[in-house]
Length: 253
Length: 271
Image (tube, each protein chain N blue to C red):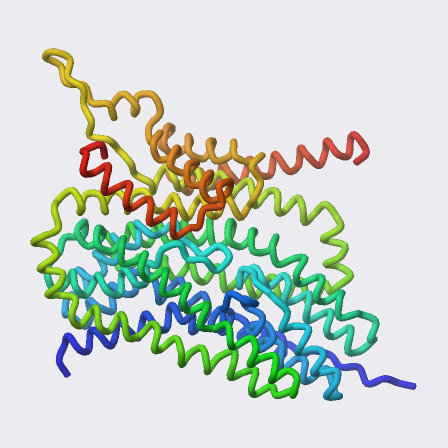
Protein backbone atom coordinates (compact mmCIF):
# COMPACT_ATOMS: atom_id res chain seq x y z
CA UNK A 1 0.00 0.00 0.00
CA UNK A 2 1.06 3.54 -0.72
CA UNK A 3 2.70 5.12 2.28
CA UNK A 4 0.49 8.20 2.22
CA UNK A 5 -2.70 6.11 2.18
CA UNK A 6 -1.37 4.03 5.07
CA UNK A 7 -0.59 7.25 6.97
CA UNK A 8 -4.08 8.65 6.35
CA UNK A 9 -5.70 5.42 7.54
CA UNK A 10 -3.50 5.21 10.65
CA UNK A 11 -4.13 8.83 11.68
CA UNK A 12 -7.87 8.55 11.06
CA UNK A 13 -7.99 5.32 13.12
CA UNK A 14 -6.08 6.90 15.99
CA UNK A 15 -8.38 9.91 15.92
CA UNK A 16 -11.52 7.76 15.82
CA UNK A 17 -10.33 5.67 18.78
CA UNK A 18 -9.25 8.61 20.91
CA UNK A 19 -12.10 11.03 20.26
CA UNK A 20 -14.76 8.36 20.01
CA UNK A 21 -13.39 7.74 23.53
CA UNK A 22 -13.19 4.05 22.70
CA UNK A 23 -11.16 2.96 25.72
CA UNK A 24 -12.02 5.68 28.20
CA UNK A 25 -9.42 8.07 29.56
CA UNK A 26 -6.65 5.88 28.12
CA UNK A 27 -7.94 6.69 24.64
CA UNK A 28 -8.71 10.31 25.49
CA UNK A 29 -5.47 11.23 27.22
CA UNK A 30 -2.88 8.70 25.98
CA UNK A 31 -3.77 7.64 22.43
CA UNK A 32 -5.07 11.14 21.69
CA UNK A 33 -1.94 12.90 22.93
CA UNK A 34 0.27 14.48 20.24
CA UNK A 35 3.32 12.61 21.64
CA UNK A 36 1.74 9.21 20.91
CA UNK A 37 0.34 10.39 17.58
CA UNK A 38 3.76 11.82 16.70
CA UNK A 39 5.47 8.49 17.34
CA UNK A 40 2.93 6.58 15.23
CA UNK A 41 3.18 8.97 12.30
CA UNK A 42 6.96 9.03 12.66
CA UNK A 43 7.04 5.23 12.43
CA UNK A 44 5.02 5.24 9.22
CA UNK A 45 6.94 8.14 7.70
CA UNK A 46 10.26 6.51 8.61
CA UNK A 47 11.58 9.18 10.98
CA UNK A 48 10.33 8.43 14.49
CA UNK A 49 12.45 11.05 16.20
CA UNK A 50 11.10 13.95 14.13
CA UNK A 51 7.55 12.75 14.77
CA UNK A 52 8.28 12.57 18.49
CA UNK A 53 9.73 16.08 18.58
CA UNK A 54 6.92 17.75 16.62
CA UNK A 55 4.43 15.83 18.78
CA UNK A 56 6.17 17.06 21.93
CA UNK A 57 6.04 20.65 20.68
CA UNK A 58 2.32 20.48 19.97
CA UNK A 59 1.64 18.61 23.24
CA UNK A 60 3.34 21.39 25.22
CA UNK A 61 0.96 24.00 23.82
CA UNK A 62 -2.10 21.91 24.68
CA UNK A 63 -0.82 20.37 27.95
CA UNK A 64 -3.03 22.39 30.26
CA UNK A 65 -6.18 21.65 28.37
CA UNK A 66 -8.39 18.99 29.89
CA UNK A 67 -12.12 18.55 29.43
CA UNK A 68 -14.02 19.92 32.43
CA UNK A 69 -17.58 18.63 32.22
CA UNK A 70 -16.75 16.82 28.99
CA UNK A 71 -16.22 20.11 27.12
CA UNK A 72 -12.91 19.96 25.31
CA UNK A 73 -12.18 23.62 24.51
CA UNK A 74 -9.74 22.77 21.74
CA UNK A 75 -8.80 19.39 20.37
CA UNK A 76 -5.13 18.49 20.37
CA UNK A 77 -5.96 15.09 18.85
CA UNK A 78 -7.27 16.67 15.65
CA UNK A 79 -4.38 19.14 15.61
CA UNK A 80 -1.80 16.36 15.95
CA UNK A 81 -3.40 13.72 13.72
CA UNK A 82 -3.63 16.13 10.79
CA UNK A 83 -0.66 18.43 11.35
CA UNK A 84 2.14 16.01 12.27
CA UNK A 85 2.01 13.89 9.07
CA UNK A 86 1.74 17.02 6.95
CA UNK A 87 4.62 18.64 8.82
CA UNK A 88 6.78 15.53 8.31
CA UNK A 89 6.00 15.39 4.60
CA UNK A 90 6.50 19.09 3.87
CA UNK A 91 9.37 19.68 6.28
CA UNK A 92 7.61 22.35 8.36
CA UNK A 93 9.40 23.63 11.45
CA UNK A 94 7.94 22.81 14.87
CA UNK A 95 6.84 26.47 15.25
CA UNK A 96 5.05 26.46 11.91
CA UNK A 97 3.36 23.15 12.79
CA UNK A 98 2.16 24.64 16.09
CA UNK A 99 0.76 27.73 14.35
CA UNK A 100 -1.37 25.62 12.02
CA UNK A 101 -2.27 23.21 14.83
CA UNK A 102 -4.18 25.96 16.67
CA UNK A 103 -7.04 26.48 14.16
CA UNK A 104 -7.19 22.74 13.44
CA UNK A 105 -7.66 22.05 17.15
CA UNK A 106 -10.57 24.48 17.16
CA UNK A 107 -12.23 22.71 14.22
CA UNK A 108 -11.78 19.38 15.99
CA UNK A 109 -13.55 20.69 19.08
CA UNK A 110 -16.60 21.59 16.95
CA UNK A 111 -16.63 18.05 15.58
CA UNK A 112 -16.69 16.69 19.13
CA UNK A 113 -19.65 18.89 20.03
CA UNK A 114 -21.41 17.47 16.99
CA UNK A 115 -20.70 13.96 18.31
CA UNK A 116 -22.59 14.73 21.51
CA UNK A 117 -25.59 15.90 19.49
CA UNK A 118 -25.52 12.83 17.25
CA UNK A 119 -25.47 10.63 20.36
CA UNK A 120 -28.71 12.11 21.78
CA UNK A 121 -31.07 9.58 20.10
CA UNK A 122 -29.18 6.80 21.90
CA UNK A 123 -30.83 7.93 25.14
CA UNK A 124 -34.30 7.27 23.76
CA UNK A 125 -33.18 3.93 22.36
CA UNK A 126 -31.84 3.03 25.81
CA UNK A 127 -35.15 4.06 27.41
CA UNK A 128 -37.02 1.70 25.07
CA UNK A 129 -34.65 -1.16 25.84
CA UNK A 130 -34.97 -0.54 29.58
CA UNK A 131 -38.76 -0.69 29.25
CA UNK A 132 -38.38 -4.12 27.62
CA UNK A 133 -35.56 -5.13 30.04
CA UNK A 134 -33.39 -5.77 26.98
CA UNK A 135 -29.89 -5.61 28.46
CA UNK A 136 -28.25 -6.54 25.16
CA UNK A 137 -30.00 -3.57 23.59
CA UNK A 138 -28.62 -1.22 26.23
CA UNK A 139 -25.14 -2.61 25.56
CA UNK A 140 -25.63 -1.79 21.88
CA UNK A 141 -26.72 1.76 22.74
CA UNK A 142 -23.75 2.16 25.08
CA UNK A 143 -21.09 0.75 22.75
CA UNK A 144 -21.86 -0.42 19.24
CA UNK A 145 -24.17 2.29 17.87
CA UNK A 146 -22.01 5.25 18.99
CA UNK A 147 -18.82 3.46 17.88
CA UNK A 148 -20.32 3.07 14.41
CA UNK A 149 -21.66 6.62 14.06
CA UNK A 150 -18.46 8.17 15.38
CA UNK A 151 -16.52 6.21 12.75
CA UNK A 152 -18.24 8.19 10.02
CA UNK A 153 -17.96 11.45 11.91
CA UNK A 154 -14.34 11.18 13.08
CA UNK A 155 -12.53 8.84 10.67
CA UNK A 156 -13.43 10.48 7.37
CA UNK A 157 -12.41 14.13 8.00
CA UNK A 158 -8.95 13.18 9.26
CA UNK A 159 -8.48 10.64 6.47
CA UNK A 160 -9.26 13.26 3.82
CA UNK A 161 -7.20 16.06 5.39
CA UNK A 162 -4.12 13.85 5.81
CA UNK A 163 -4.41 12.41 2.31
CA UNK A 164 -4.92 15.69 0.48
CA UNK A 165 -3.71 18.28 2.98
CA UNK A 166 -0.07 18.27 1.93
CA UNK A 167 -0.48 20.26 -1.29
CA UNK A 168 -2.94 22.61 0.36
CA UNK A 169 -0.41 23.21 3.12
CA UNK A 170 2.43 23.96 0.69
CA UNK A 171 0.22 26.48 -1.10
CA UNK A 172 -0.95 27.97 2.19
CA UNK A 173 2.64 28.47 3.30
CA UNK A 174 3.26 30.50 0.17
CA UNK A 175 0.27 32.81 0.57
CA UNK A 176 -0.30 33.11 4.31
CA UNK A 177 1.50 36.27 5.43
CA UNK A 178 3.99 36.24 8.27
CA UNK A 179 1.76 38.25 10.64
CA UNK A 180 -1.02 35.66 10.47
CA UNK A 181 1.45 32.86 11.23
CA UNK A 182 2.82 34.91 14.13
CA UNK A 183 -0.70 35.69 15.36
CA UNK A 184 -1.49 31.97 15.45
CA UNK A 185 1.71 31.28 17.36
CA UNK A 186 0.74 33.97 19.89
CA UNK A 187 -2.72 32.40 20.22
CA UNK A 188 -1.01 29.06 20.84
CA UNK A 189 0.95 30.66 23.66
CA UNK A 190 -2.19 32.04 25.29
CA UNK A 191 -4.64 29.16 24.81
CA UNK A 192 -3.48 26.98 27.75
CA UNK A 193 -4.90 29.75 29.97
CA UNK A 194 -8.39 28.92 28.71
CA UNK A 195 -8.03 25.40 30.11
CA UNK A 196 -6.81 26.73 33.45
CA UNK A 197 -9.63 29.30 33.61
CA UNK A 198 -12.12 26.47 33.01
CA UNK A 199 -10.67 24.46 35.88
CA UNK A 200 -10.74 27.49 38.19
CA UNK A 201 -14.35 28.01 37.19
CA UNK A 202 -15.27 24.38 37.91
CA UNK A 203 -13.65 24.57 41.35
CA UNK A 204 -16.03 27.48 41.76
CA UNK A 205 -14.57 29.16 44.85
CA UNK A 206 -13.62 32.77 44.11
CA UNK A 207 -12.44 33.17 47.71
CA UNK A 208 -9.49 30.86 46.83
CA UNK A 209 -8.20 33.18 44.06
CA UNK A 210 -5.27 34.47 46.21
CA UNK A 211 -3.79 30.95 46.00
CA UNK A 212 -3.58 31.32 42.21
CA UNK A 213 -1.44 34.38 42.73
CA UNK A 214 0.82 32.61 45.25
CA UNK A 215 1.37 29.76 42.77
CA UNK A 216 2.03 32.18 39.96
CA UNK A 217 4.55 34.19 41.99
CA UNK A 218 6.41 31.02 43.07
CA UNK A 219 7.15 30.09 39.45
CA UNK A 220 7.25 33.41 37.65
CA UNK A 221 8.97 35.66 40.18
CA UNK A 222 10.83 33.23 42.43
CA UNK A 223 11.74 30.92 39.55
CA UNK A 224 10.78 27.63 41.20
CA UNK A 225 9.82 24.66 39.04
CA UNK A 226 6.31 23.21 39.06
CA UNK A 227 7.25 20.24 41.26
CA UNK A 228 8.68 22.40 44.05
CA UNK A 229 5.64 24.65 43.80
CA UNK A 230 3.46 21.54 44.11
CA UNK A 231 5.21 20.59 47.35
CA UNK A 232 4.68 24.10 48.75
CA UNK A 233 1.05 23.98 47.61
CA UNK A 234 0.46 20.69 49.46
CA UNK A 235 2.02 22.16 52.61
CA UNK A 236 -0.13 25.27 52.43
CA UNK A 237 -3.22 23.14 51.85
CA UNK A 238 -2.47 21.12 55.01
CA UNK A 239 -1.76 24.22 57.10
CA UNK A 240 -4.93 25.94 56.00
CA UNK A 241 -7.18 22.93 56.53
CA UNK A 242 -5.76 22.13 59.99
CA UNK A 243 -5.96 25.75 61.09
CA UNK A 244 -9.57 25.90 60.02
CA UNK A 245 -10.29 22.72 61.95
CA UNK A 246 -8.63 23.99 65.11
CA UNK A 247 -10.46 27.27 64.87
CA UNK A 248 -13.85 25.62 64.50
CA UNK A 249 -13.09 23.35 67.46
CA UNK A 250 -12.14 26.38 69.55
CA UNK A 251 -15.39 28.16 68.87
CA UNK A 252 -17.24 24.86 69.28
CA UNK A 253 -18.34 24.60 65.64
CA UNK B 1 -37.23 -17.47 57.17
CA UNK B 2 -33.59 -17.46 56.04
CA UNK B 3 -33.07 -15.12 53.17
CA UNK B 4 -30.54 -15.98 50.53
CA UNK B 5 -28.13 -13.08 50.75
CA UNK B 6 -26.59 -11.92 47.48
CA UNK B 7 -23.06 -10.73 47.94
CA UNK B 8 -21.01 -9.00 45.26
CA UNK B 9 -17.65 -10.63 44.58
CA UNK B 10 -14.25 -9.20 43.74
CA UNK B 11 -14.78 -10.00 40.08
CA UNK B 12 -18.17 -8.23 40.05
CA UNK B 13 -16.48 -5.06 41.26
CA UNK B 14 -13.62 -5.38 38.78
CA UNK B 15 -15.99 -6.02 35.91
CA UNK B 16 -18.08 -2.96 36.79
CA UNK B 17 -15.00 -0.77 37.04
CA UNK B 18 -13.65 -1.97 33.71
CA UNK B 19 -16.98 -1.51 31.92
CA UNK B 20 -17.30 1.99 33.37
CA UNK B 21 -13.72 3.00 32.49
CA UNK B 22 -13.94 1.63 28.97
CA UNK B 23 -17.33 3.07 28.03
CA UNK B 24 -17.62 6.30 30.08
CA UNK B 25 -17.80 8.71 27.22
CA UNK B 26 -18.46 6.57 24.14
CA UNK B 27 -22.18 7.39 24.32
CA UNK B 28 -21.64 10.87 25.79
CA UNK B 29 -24.48 13.17 24.72
CA UNK B 30 -26.00 16.54 25.53
CA UNK B 31 -29.26 15.16 26.87
CA UNK B 32 -28.14 12.83 29.65
CA UNK B 33 -24.35 12.79 29.31
CA UNK B 34 -22.90 9.54 30.73
CA UNK B 35 -26.16 7.89 31.85
CA UNK B 36 -26.10 5.03 29.32
CA UNK B 37 -22.50 4.17 30.22
CA UNK B 38 -23.27 4.11 33.93
CA UNK B 39 -26.23 1.79 33.32
CA UNK B 40 -24.10 -0.37 31.02
CA UNK B 41 -21.36 -0.61 33.65
CA UNK B 42 -23.75 -1.71 36.39
CA UNK B 43 -25.81 -4.10 34.24
CA UNK B 44 -24.13 -7.42 35.16
CA UNK B 45 -24.34 -6.52 38.87
CA UNK B 46 -28.00 -5.49 38.59
CA UNK B 47 -28.81 -8.73 36.77
CA UNK B 48 -27.17 -10.68 39.54
CA UNK B 49 -28.90 -8.75 42.33
CA UNK B 50 -32.45 -8.56 41.01
CA UNK B 51 -34.34 -11.74 40.16
CA UNK B 52 -37.65 -10.37 38.95
CA UNK B 53 -38.06 -8.57 35.68
CA UNK B 54 -39.84 -5.66 37.35
CA UNK B 55 -37.04 -5.02 39.84
CA UNK B 56 -34.43 -5.16 37.08
CA UNK B 57 -36.44 -2.81 34.88
CA UNK B 58 -36.78 -0.35 37.74
CA UNK B 59 -33.04 -0.54 38.38
CA UNK B 60 -32.15 0.08 34.73
CA UNK B 61 -34.53 3.02 34.56
CA UNK B 62 -33.23 4.73 37.67
CA UNK B 63 -29.67 4.62 36.36
CA UNK B 64 -30.64 6.06 32.99
CA UNK B 65 -31.27 9.42 34.69
CA UNK B 66 -28.86 12.25 33.81
CA UNK B 67 -25.37 11.55 35.07
CA UNK B 68 -22.10 13.33 34.39
CA UNK B 69 -18.86 13.27 36.37
CA UNK B 70 -15.12 12.76 36.11
CA UNK B 71 -14.58 9.12 35.10
CA UNK B 72 -11.82 8.14 37.49
CA UNK B 73 -12.68 10.26 40.53
CA UNK B 74 -16.19 8.94 39.83
CA UNK B 75 -15.09 5.71 41.53
CA UNK B 76 -16.22 7.45 44.72
CA UNK B 77 -19.79 7.32 43.44
CA UNK B 78 -19.47 3.97 41.67
CA UNK B 79 -18.39 2.17 44.85
CA UNK B 80 -21.11 3.83 46.90
CA UNK B 81 -23.80 2.92 44.38
CA UNK B 82 -22.59 -0.70 44.28
CA UNK B 83 -22.88 -0.90 48.06
CA UNK B 84 -26.32 0.70 47.97
CA UNK B 85 -27.66 -1.57 45.24
CA UNK B 86 -26.43 -4.59 47.15
CA UNK B 87 -28.15 -3.39 50.30
CA UNK B 88 -31.34 -2.55 48.43
CA UNK B 89 -31.50 -6.02 46.84
CA UNK B 90 -30.92 -7.78 50.17
CA UNK B 91 -32.74 -5.60 52.69
CA UNK B 92 -35.04 -3.59 50.46
CA UNK B 93 -34.68 -0.61 52.76
CA UNK B 94 -33.19 1.83 50.27
CA UNK B 95 -35.44 3.85 48.01
CA UNK B 96 -34.83 4.69 44.36
CA UNK B 97 -34.67 8.33 45.34
CA UNK B 98 -31.82 7.67 47.78
CA UNK B 99 -29.66 6.12 45.05
CA UNK B 100 -30.48 8.79 42.48
CA UNK B 101 -29.97 11.44 45.16
CA UNK B 102 -26.48 10.19 46.01
CA UNK B 103 -25.53 10.14 42.33
CA UNK B 104 -26.82 13.59 41.42
CA UNK B 105 -25.72 15.11 44.72
CA UNK B 106 -22.15 13.89 44.43
CA UNK B 107 -21.46 14.12 40.70
CA UNK B 108 -20.73 17.87 40.75
CA UNK B 109 -18.25 17.99 43.64
CA UNK B 110 -16.59 14.75 42.49
CA UNK B 111 -16.16 16.13 38.96
CA UNK B 112 -14.66 19.35 40.32
CA UNK B 113 -12.27 17.31 42.48
CA UNK B 114 -11.19 15.07 39.58
CA UNK B 115 -10.95 17.83 36.98
CA UNK B 116 -8.91 20.12 39.20
CA UNK B 117 -6.83 17.73 41.30
CA UNK B 118 -6.17 14.38 39.62
CA UNK B 119 -6.70 15.16 35.94
CA UNK B 120 -6.02 18.89 36.20
CA UNK B 121 -2.96 18.91 38.44
CA UNK B 122 -1.32 15.48 38.76
CA UNK B 123 -1.84 14.45 35.16
CA UNK B 124 -1.06 17.89 33.76
CA UNK B 125 2.30 17.87 35.56
CA UNK B 126 3.11 14.47 33.99
CA UNK B 127 2.04 15.65 30.52
CA UNK B 128 4.07 18.81 30.95
CA UNK B 129 7.18 16.76 31.76
CA UNK B 130 6.33 14.34 28.94
CA UNK B 131 6.02 17.04 26.29
CA UNK B 132 9.24 18.75 27.37
CA UNK B 133 11.08 15.42 27.12
CA UNK B 134 9.47 14.52 23.79
CA UNK B 135 10.16 17.95 22.27
CA UNK B 136 13.82 17.36 23.19
CA UNK B 137 13.73 14.01 21.38
CA UNK B 138 13.59 11.69 24.40
CA UNK B 139 11.37 8.60 24.37
CA UNK B 140 11.07 8.79 28.16
CA UNK B 141 8.34 11.32 27.31
CA UNK B 142 6.04 8.48 26.29
CA UNK B 143 6.65 6.80 29.64
CA UNK B 144 5.77 10.00 31.52
CA UNK B 145 2.62 10.32 29.43
CA UNK B 146 1.62 6.81 30.46
CA UNK B 147 2.43 7.56 34.10
CA UNK B 148 -0.05 10.45 34.07
CA UNK B 149 -2.67 8.08 32.71
CA UNK B 150 -1.77 5.31 35.15
CA UNK B 151 -2.33 7.64 38.13
CA UNK B 152 -5.91 8.15 36.96
CA UNK B 153 -6.49 4.40 36.57
CA UNK B 154 -5.23 3.85 40.12
CA UNK B 155 -7.55 6.60 41.31
CA UNK B 156 -10.57 4.74 39.90
CA UNK B 157 -9.58 1.41 41.45
CA UNK B 158 -8.80 2.94 44.86
CA UNK B 159 -11.87 5.15 45.15
CA UNK B 160 -14.28 2.44 43.98
CA UNK B 161 -12.95 -0.14 46.42
CA UNK B 162 -12.75 2.33 49.29
CA UNK B 163 -16.32 3.52 48.99
CA UNK B 164 -17.71 0.03 48.31
CA UNK B 165 -16.03 -1.48 51.37
CA UNK B 166 -16.95 1.45 53.61
CA UNK B 167 -20.49 1.16 52.39
CA UNK B 168 -23.37 3.55 52.36
CA UNK B 169 -23.39 4.38 56.05
CA UNK B 170 -19.72 5.23 55.94
CA UNK B 171 -20.04 7.48 52.91
CA UNK B 172 -22.90 9.27 54.63
CA UNK B 173 -20.72 9.71 57.71
CA UNK B 174 -17.83 10.85 55.57
CA UNK B 175 -20.01 13.34 53.74
CA UNK B 176 -21.72 14.73 56.81
CA UNK B 177 -18.44 14.83 58.71
CA UNK B 178 -15.92 17.53 58.16
CA UNK B 179 -13.44 15.08 56.59
CA UNK B 180 -14.88 15.36 53.08
CA UNK B 181 -15.10 19.14 53.17
CA UNK B 182 -11.55 19.25 54.52
CA UNK B 183 -10.20 16.97 51.79
CA UNK B 184 -12.04 18.94 49.11
CA UNK B 185 -10.86 22.24 50.53
CA UNK B 186 -7.26 21.01 50.58
CA UNK B 187 -7.48 19.63 47.05
CA UNK B 188 -9.03 22.88 45.86
CA UNK B 189 -6.27 24.99 47.41
CA UNK B 190 -3.67 22.76 45.76
CA UNK B 191 -5.54 22.97 42.46
CA UNK B 192 -5.80 26.76 42.56
CA UNK B 193 -2.11 27.20 43.38
CA UNK B 194 -1.10 24.87 40.57
CA UNK B 195 -3.27 26.77 38.09
CA UNK B 196 -1.24 29.87 38.95
CA UNK B 197 2.04 27.93 38.72
CA UNK B 198 1.13 26.33 35.38
CA UNK B 199 0.03 29.69 34.00
CA UNK B 200 3.47 31.04 34.83
CA UNK B 201 5.29 28.16 33.16
CA UNK B 202 3.06 27.52 30.15
CA UNK B 203 1.31 30.71 29.10
CA UNK B 204 3.46 33.14 27.13
CA UNK B 205 2.49 36.61 26.03
CA UNK B 206 5.09 39.30 25.39
CA UNK B 207 5.08 42.54 23.47
CA UNK B 208 7.90 43.66 21.14
CA UNK B 209 6.79 47.30 21.47
CA UNK B 210 9.56 49.78 22.16
CA UNK B 211 9.67 53.49 22.81
CA UNK B 212 12.56 55.60 21.57
CA UNK B 213 13.77 58.50 23.68
CA UNK B 214 16.28 60.36 21.56
CA UNK B 215 19.23 57.96 21.47
CA UNK B 216 17.99 55.25 23.79
CA UNK B 217 15.48 52.63 22.77
CA UNK B 218 13.40 51.29 25.66
CA UNK B 219 11.62 47.97 25.38
CA UNK B 220 8.27 48.06 27.16
CA UNK B 221 8.44 44.34 27.94
CA UNK B 222 11.68 44.80 29.93
CA UNK B 223 9.94 47.31 32.19
CA UNK B 224 7.08 44.94 32.86
CA UNK B 225 9.53 42.08 33.50
CA UNK B 226 11.28 44.19 36.12
CA UNK B 227 7.94 44.91 37.76
CA UNK B 228 6.30 41.46 37.65
CA UNK B 229 7.65 38.84 35.24
CA UNK B 230 4.93 37.19 33.20
CA UNK B 231 2.36 39.82 34.19
CA UNK B 232 0.47 39.50 30.89
CA UNK B 233 0.08 35.73 31.32
CA UNK B 234 -1.71 36.02 34.67
CA UNK B 235 -3.82 38.94 33.40
CA UNK B 236 -4.92 36.80 30.46
CA UNK B 237 -5.86 34.00 32.88
CA UNK B 238 -8.07 36.34 34.91
CA UNK B 239 -9.58 37.79 31.74
CA UNK B 240 -10.55 34.28 30.56
CA UNK B 241 -11.90 33.42 34.02
CA UNK B 242 -13.96 36.61 33.97
CA UNK B 243 -15.34 35.89 30.49
CA UNK B 244 -16.13 32.22 31.13
CA UNK B 245 -17.16 32.36 34.79
CA UNK B 246 -18.84 35.74 35.10
CA UNK B 247 -19.95 36.67 31.60
CA UNK B 248 -20.88 33.03 30.79
CA UNK B 249 -19.42 33.34 27.31
CA UNK B 250 -19.10 29.95 25.61
CA UNK B 251 -15.68 28.34 25.44
CA UNK B 252 -15.57 28.14 21.67
CA UNK B 253 -16.39 31.85 21.40
CA UNK B 254 -13.58 32.65 23.84
CA UNK B 255 -11.06 30.57 21.88
CA UNK B 256 -12.20 31.85 18.52
CA UNK B 257 -12.03 35.41 19.83
CA UNK B 258 -8.54 34.77 21.19
CA UNK B 259 -7.30 33.70 17.77
CA UNK B 260 -8.89 36.72 16.02
CA UNK B 261 -7.48 39.15 18.61
CA UNK B 262 -4.04 37.50 18.46
CA UNK B 263 -3.88 37.84 14.68
CA UNK B 264 -5.12 41.44 14.85
CA UNK B 265 -2.55 42.38 17.50
CA UNK B 266 0.12 40.61 15.47
CA UNK B 267 -0.87 42.67 12.42
CA UNK B 268 -0.33 45.89 14.36
CA UNK B 269 2.92 44.58 15.81
CA UNK B 270 1.70 44.76 19.39
CA UNK B 271 2.44 41.12 20.25
